[in-house]
Length: 306
Image (cartoon, rainbow, N blue to C red):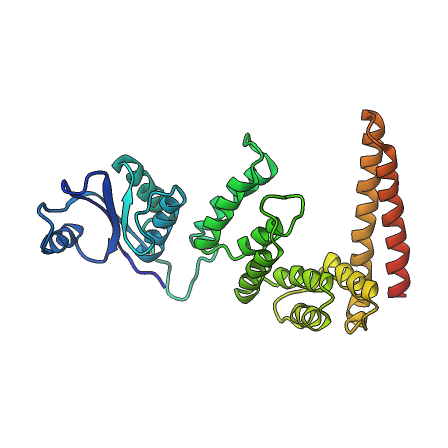
């Protein structure tokens, strides 16, 4: 639900280096006068910048999250930031570009694609840092900052990405399966079924069959999620590796071709890596073992699905 109103930046000569960034559905100058009347403040607040937006609630959250990422927020529950006024103005203008006033549509029509998704830009930047793309140096810590901000801005899938980063043993200084599980739980609660798949993998590793099955129940019995080939493959592998009953075997047989295609893609990738490795002088044995592994997987899963 939209809530049109103003974003404002206030400054006060008695608060050197601080700006107050808030929202109001009334006149920002009137809001400044209200704050100035508070006992104990010797000088009045001045409106340094104001912007009228279509949703002042979301716009304020966006600006606060952007500036909080730069560690310039004085306190989590306060609207004061230790930041130069030009930088605060840039953050508000950024929000204005996202939450600018929209042209009303005719009654009964909706514009789903046009709705603001302020988290998307931070997700893209997070991928750039994590993968070292688009001119960015590969930096998992900066990536986590971006994905965390995207989560705060409403990007539900950011929970899954953060969880996957924390659950990767190669990220030695931040590897934490318990924290990863917490993010997967948050994502699953918010409606991201891929988080259930990742939680199932963790519970399988812990040999916790009951929780493992609850996660797969949520995936296979979801009304909004169609089980993918890679998810079906993961389910069959985990059940087979632990010799657990395959409750959803018939369902996976219904997506047999998608599952086997996923394995074939791994085989093709392994062969491509092998050929590339041979050209560059890399260890051929490692790539050969990968090809052998995925060939064995193909035969194993095809037998299960027969």
